[in-house]
Amino acid sequence: MGVLENKARARTFYKYLSKVYDQINPFIWDERMRDEAIEMLGLSADDRVLDVGCGTGFATEGLLEHVDTVYGLDQSPHQLSKAYQKFGKRGDVRFHLGDAERLPFRDDAFDVVWSSGSIEYWPNPVVALRECRRITKPGGQVLIVGPDYPNSTIFQKLADAIMLFYDESEATRMFEAAGYEAFEHHIQQSRPGSPRAITTIAQVPE
Image 1 (cartoon, rainbow, N blue to C red):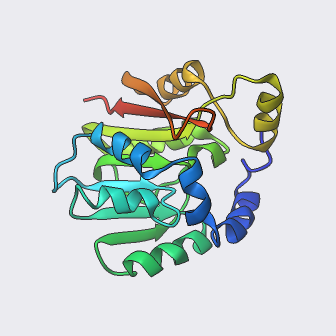
Image 2: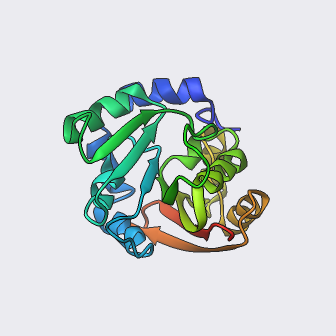
Image 3: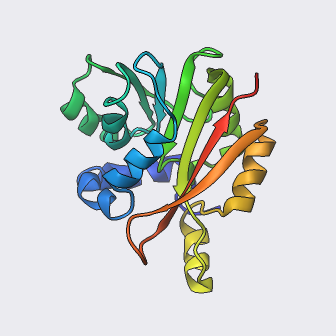
């Protein structure tokens, strides 16, 4: 398990990263990549959408261009404080402080659950993926974006020491273990040579 796959360490990490997150993030996960992933969902304005690990609201902002209301959840109060500055505490985004492995929502509460740049910090990703399935309506969609496993042996060792990186076969294993039957993986990249993202869209079984 990587050093940041620990909730307390991850919260401390984001206490400091939140100050510069919006400046650093576009080098890894930019607007074009975000918007491409959103388009894969075919959202309707009245869809009820949850952004798990919403952070400062980068994905939330894009989702709001397609739906009327987004729910945002994050375990870092420092990240959420930055999101409040963008959206306010009581507006089109309804924020919750919470844990991806124990989502504070009823069964079948959402049409779509989105999570980008969060799974790599989950100590038990299969548990969190099951939670995402639980709160999504049958036939709904769960979209997860995480860091694709590097090709270089040196970078693989570094990645493994920090947090969760995974390839398509590992993504398939995790989603199957979490009870999903239909899903597809897409590799996204900001520019040649930059870190790749693995984006998985899964349909919740009827």
